[in-house]
Structure formats: structure tokens, C-alpha cells
Amino acid sequence: MGDFAQAFQIAFNLLWSMDLELYSIVYLSLKVSISAVLISCAIGFVIGAALTVFRFPGRRFLLILFNALMGLPPVVVGLMVYMVLSRAGPLGVLGLLYTPTAMIVAQTVLITPLVAALSAQVLQELHLEYDEFFRSLQLSAREKLMALLWEGRFGLVTVGLAGFGRAISEVGAVMIVGGNINHMTRIMTTAIALETSKGTLALALALGIILIVISLLVNTSVALIRAKAREAIYA
Amino acid sequence: MSKRTIGFVGGLVWVWLALTSIAHAGEQKSIIVQSTTSTQNSGLFDFILPRFKKHSGITVNVVAVGTGQALKNGRNGDGDVLLVHAKSDEKKFVSDGYGVKRFDVMYNDFMIVGPREDPADLAGEKNIIAALRKISAAKAVFTSRGDDSGTNKKERQLWKQAGIDVANSSGSWYRETGSGMGATLNIAAGMNAYTLTDRATWIVFNNKGNLKIMSEGDKRLFNQYGVLLINPERHKHVKLLQGQTFIRWLTGAKGQAAIASYKQKGKQLFFPNAPSMTH
Image 1 (cartoon, each protein chain N blue to C red):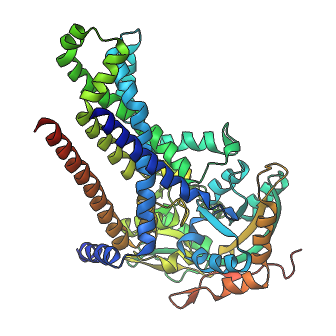
Image 2: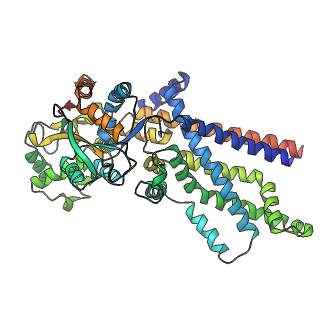
């Protein structure tokens, strides 16, 4: 119980004292995860829309595949990205291992299937609603795809947030490809793992509390922006 | 409206990507050192690396994993320098052509820690082999790293010397955590188990709970750390000059003095023992 109280105290002190080390770790966490989310959305939304609009053999299988890959274990993704980016691997010449870029790659691989599967879900429901309307306008498949993405934008923001949640909270993949290097590839989750292994549990928990607060802030600001945007349209 | 929104979102993405790429622009001299959890968790690197940077201008980026994984990563060429603690494996690494030359850097020792109640009646047993036999005879819970780290290699070697086949007891009283030293100490504290730990990690570890030192001082518990450069002939990208600068500093007078002066809780954690002149 003492540890819990102490953890809140440490978390508060760290935030209050503007601890530079902490802020740079928070910054890197956000940078890596937001970059991964942006890339994943660019890929995943298009995949989701394509799976909704186009009918082709293997479509159903792809939907099941992306749904299954939502549960990809981060540590497996980390291992695969490590083997590809390692100096002994196919992309070793790029020298990307143990850089923030490698962490972005790993998280992108991790969450793209989730973004694709969830956006397909959102867009399919929308598609049912708009099908006749689209037909009456005689839209081409490409136009339909763009229209769906635009009309589904609010639902897709939620999909992006789900991706962000998975990215910012994972530790298995970034630990392997980032190496948890101080001042270079250390982020919130790997810092928590490190402090736990040192037995400084209160500090580890304090970092966890801060991570949750950040997650809350990101979700709140997105919710606010979305509400404003809705208001602008429907008011 | 819609075009403006798209333009706005596009602009945001662009600004984000531009901001994040700035951070990469300031390239500086740096090397990657594959090392062990014990050297990182003890805080040694945080103490000596700023001194090295002041001396040389080179940033040392440490990836802390078990010695087994460090050697594997080194074999793949993922890093410039290895600083690990499994002498025979390091020598093999060099003789196989993956490393250039190995130097002793520093040492400390291993010891057995265990619960205060001491179910295997270990307290004060100086002979490590006898201590292990007592644990096995009492079937007292023992947590092993089980991760092929330097500490794990040493531990398996000691069990072998004691003539005990722990594989038979895996999952009963012999429990392999497959994690780093700190994580294994956390587990040992939680299960009231015995475990083999290096002294540096133990001294700085903050969650000792009911654990205390049970057996220490046997010569066989010697823990030697060595440093070596990954072979640039095999991996062209290895930063030969910067790596060598680090090894020379570490095994030279300044590095050795820095190691000796690092203390935690009033105790010296590592004892320098590099050969007096290394090149």
C-alpha cells in the first residue's frame, strides 16, 4: 500500500518538477506511436475501404486474416522486424536497428492489421446505409471508396485511437528493435520495464500513471476536436 | 469545406513528419555497445559513459541484454563493441572470427541469496558446491535466470560441478524465469526462493523483500567482464576507430580509475583488472 501512495507522489513530483529526462521519454513515446498511427491509418483505411467496395476472390479470407492479425503478439512482431533490420538481415544495410525509425516500423506492422480490420467494419456498416444512394449517383468504385472514407471519418478517428492505444502501450516489440537505449530509444513502456527490473517499483508505477494520463489527454483532445467538427457540420 | 479540411489535415501530417525528422538531423559520433543487464542495472554506464564522452566526444549507446543474446546480436553485426561476462564464450567468439581481440576489464563476484528462513540451511556455507547440494537435497525453491546469460552460464556450470542434473527438477523446485537478473530477483523475492546473482545487481536492487546473502566468497564465484570489438572485416559498418577508442579508454588508466571510483550505497561494485598496457 505504501508503494501505491509513494508512486502517486513520485508521479506528481516528476510532472511538477518538469523533469527533462521524463519529458524527453514522453516526447519519444508520442513521436514513435503517433508516427506509427499516421502511417498505419494511411495504409489501413485504404485497405479497409477497398475490402468494402471491391468484390474479389479471397476478400472474405483477407477480412478474416486481418481480424486474426489484430491479436499479433508484439514480441513476435519485434522479432520479425529485428531479423529484417539486423545487419545480417535483408535490410541490414540501412542501419536502422536501434533507432526510433525501427520502433516506428515495428509499431506500424503491429497496428496496421488492427486499423484495416476495424475500418473495414466501420465502412461496411456505412456502405449498407449508402449503397442505394451511391448507385443512384452511379459512382465509380474509386469515387465510392473516397466517398466512404470521407463519410466515415468520425468512425475512422476512433479506429485510429484504438491503434494508438495498442501502439503506446506495447513493450515487447520496441524493446527488441529499439534496444531501450538511454536518451535515444527509451520510451515510457521500456523505462517502466527497466525500473521494474531494478526493483524500484514505486518509480515504475509512477511512470505507468503518467503513461495513463498521457493516453487520457490524447483521447480527450481527439474527442474534443471531433465534437467541434461535428458541431460545425450539423449545427 | 472538404478540400480545406483535407489540406489542413495534410498540413498537420507534414508538420509532424518535419518536426520528427529534425531530431535525426544532428548526427554525431556514436557507437553501439551490446552489454549485460547487470552493468546497466547497477548504474555503472550512467557513471562512466559521460566521462568517456567528455574525453572523446563519442556517445556510447548501450543495448542491455543477456550475454547470450549480446553475443548473438554481435554475431549478426548489430553493434560495434561487446562488454559481457562469459570468458570462454567470448574467446570462442573471437576465435570464430566474429570479434577482434578480447580484453579483461573488471570483475566482481556472484553469490547465492535466499529467504531469511533459510529452509536449506545455507547461511554461512562458503563452499558453493556444498551450498548447491544442500538446496537440491532440501528441494528448496531456486530461481534460475534460464536465459543463457553470463550469470545463467555460470550457474549451470556450477550445478554441473556439483553433479546435479537440474533439468530433472525443472518446474518443481528448480524454476527458470527466462528473464534478466532484476526480474529474477523480483521473482525470487516473491516466491521466497534462492537464486544466484552478481554482486552489483544485488547491491543496487531495491526490492529485496525477505532475501539476504546466504553463500559468498568461494573462488569459483569469480565474475570476469571482458570487452571486445566486433570484427570490422566481417561487418564493414563497424566503427573501428571509435570502437577502439572506447576499448582503449576503458582498459586504460582513466577508464579503470572511473570503474574503481563508482560506488553505490557506499560499496564499490566493480574492480578494474585490465592488463596494464593493452596495445
